[in-house]
Image (cartoon, rainbow, N blue to C red; front, side, top):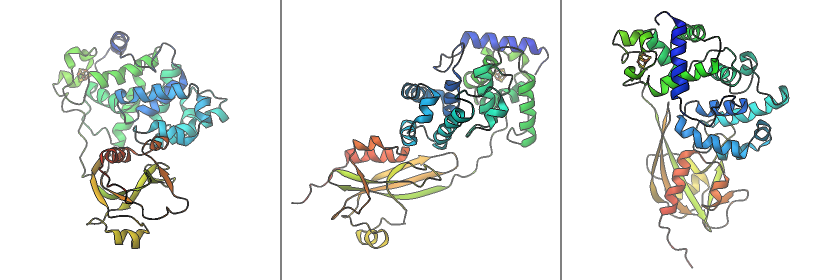
Length: 355
Ligand code: SF4
């Protein structure tokens, strides 16, 4: 970055105060609970997606104490569709810990914040600075890109040494006052002007301080991520019906989509299972499975393909099994692909029941 740090800070802050997007968690004196909630939701998720979830949460849980007292299943149900459910579980545990260890007040310092479940260095810095004006640096994907370009950093921002350098820079450039707005401004700049492709340098308030722009290399910095092949996992899903209700099962308490509910899901075979195989291998007494379609779901490090079939249960349902009508499904938190599967069921042409 070019000299005159004060000028850089003023330019960025003036631009932010004039241009910032009006978001429901932003205010002159933000509620620390709102900052904790929004920053948790914003991890790996776009602002436009988060806004309706944030509004729903603060309507249902107006205070941190309300969130702490809530049932985890209800939180997961409200979180449904936002993905990365571990965040919801951590948020719940975090609210409980703030209540028990900090009398319900979200801590103001980074060290105490880092001891809370689900709070890493970035989120701790964001809460401390945005909610309380504590001089703490932040470094997320947007800020990383902005800093790399301002200083024309050529090394891979994912490397440990570059990370350390970037954290140091994020701290060095903090102003003496208005730290929360300054950190928000860095993120806002990355989200709106200093975008991964086609950065809008002509509109950028800190263009005179940007080495990458001066060198005409803003498109080359930061170094792109090396792409790895994303493994494909195939699953066989059987939507089993009995008297207009469907068999759902709860996933294990650990792992992906932990504690959420799903239709009967089996490891996929090369060929669809026959009625006989479903009976002998899995103890499922069902009518001949009818294909419903394929649902695909892509995550950062893996992708899924669900081959979806529908059957009727034959005889009495097994003891202890859970059944829900399509309307009742909304009482259960379902992973996104199973929400898509539920949509397929609404259009499936079921054969008329015999007799
Ligand atoms: Fe980003 Fe361009 Fe501004 Fe530099 S001048 S910070 S590359 S938008």
